[in-house]
Image 1 (cartoon, rainbow, N blue to C red):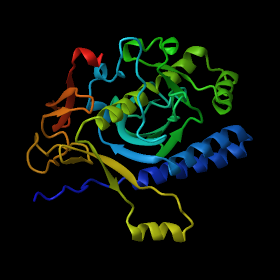
Image 2: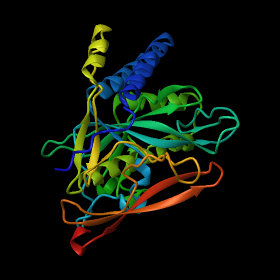
Image 3: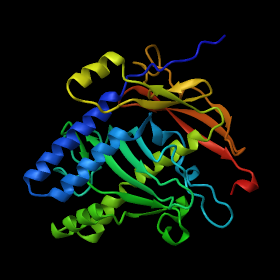
Length: 331
């Protein structure tokens, strides 16, 4: 009998825990600056991370090409994505853009780090919320927490955006099958008013909103992967001894999370290249080979590997494209 593969990557409980810690620190700073509404919103987001079902998908933006990430189309309208859980917390690798001199506070993903690459690898936590009862609005609310390596802190905007699949809401992102706007909850409205009061133009606020496109792509990738026939959710639990240690300190939050297993292989770590072009020392991951898979709707998907050489770093990296062969009934 073939031995079941276990999770072998570096555990990520600490990233969820550190993000919550930094957000709770931000709550104190907001209260000191007499911003109680922002503080309340930040505290709510931290609590949502604690109680939501957590996932980790490495290199999530490099698995499926953007053009294949739109939701299914039934001939009249797009069918909304369904989150695996009403509160889904997705940790993934991403990058931030290294731009103008100084730190650009007008966008969470646009900063400047001297003597650093144009794009800097980091981690992001997408907080995704969806009502899933019959007859409920299936729009997905999203907040985002990004690790800023130049500050060594997790940063979050106390606001929700909204991914809508209603035909009347799909505008600029029609090609992707969704609408993107700020969620009209009181805390988000208060955040937008704060931006306006502090001199941000509508264009600048729109730039901040556009940063959530990255979260949509990550969410859509997770939903598509979960539709693959042999996709399984593999739990990664905090060791009992560590959990007891946290409990003694009064830390009762659950930071267990899940990774995906597809084709019997656990997707638990990003690809790491060898020291001289992919030789010894490279860690094998879910990106190691092409696969042919079938979704639960009968759609055939081919996972095709492609290797790229990064000459400056002299490292190999792999990416995967998901090429989808559709029947006419799929769209």
